[in-house]
Image (cartoon, rainbow, N blue to C red; front, side, top):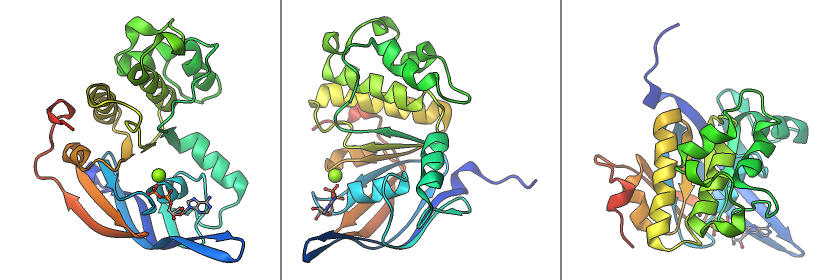
Length: 241
Ligand SMILES: Nc1ncnc2c1ncn2[C@@H]1O[C@H](COP(=O)(O)OP(=O)(O)O)[C@@H](O)[C@H]1O
Ligand SMILES: [Mg+2]
């Protein structure tokens, strides 16, 4: 097989993606024709004002929601109008999610929260490996209430990556954190991206975070307003907000 440069392989390709929510008599056009390519192994940051359609797009990419119209290709698979069964299998086999709120089970330790996923995955890492990858090897037997917000988010990242997903989708992962702990979370995401080569998308409304990305996608009013490739990426530790 011909060698293809890692950074040139398109993982997601969307064309003309629309999403219309029906609210009684009203129609809300959350996405108005999104054309976007995401590349294997890249860390992208998606910026945009509140209501610009970031979460809607991320949920569609991850198979949590479906587009109204258009094309969402994951490799050669079109996710638009895929059956629920197909989308469930897609999520299970390929996608890890991280959300603003960590959704950890409070009665389980960090290790146990991660093992919930590793027990049902095909080729998982161990909970210990996943937690070490986010710098929590010393905190494995702590309960969520014994961890800071940033540490809890890193447990959530460990849980999301333990199944070795191809794609990691993060919706405002630092939204509830102060800048110092937010930076630690971003460092964990960057480390995972580098070590595992997981194609990663990080949504934020904090433009500073764009400086750590390879690709910065600006969403505006349900469309991609611009895509910028950073010539130099900042380390998360250099970011201040
Ligand atoms: N489930 C829903 N039902 C109706 N409207 C929705 C729903 N989810 C999002 N919206 C609307 O779609 C638009 C885009 O929302 P969203 O994708 O959450 O934006 P962002 O994540 O950029 O803040 C907003 O106008 C929002 O109110
Ligand atoms: Mg959102």
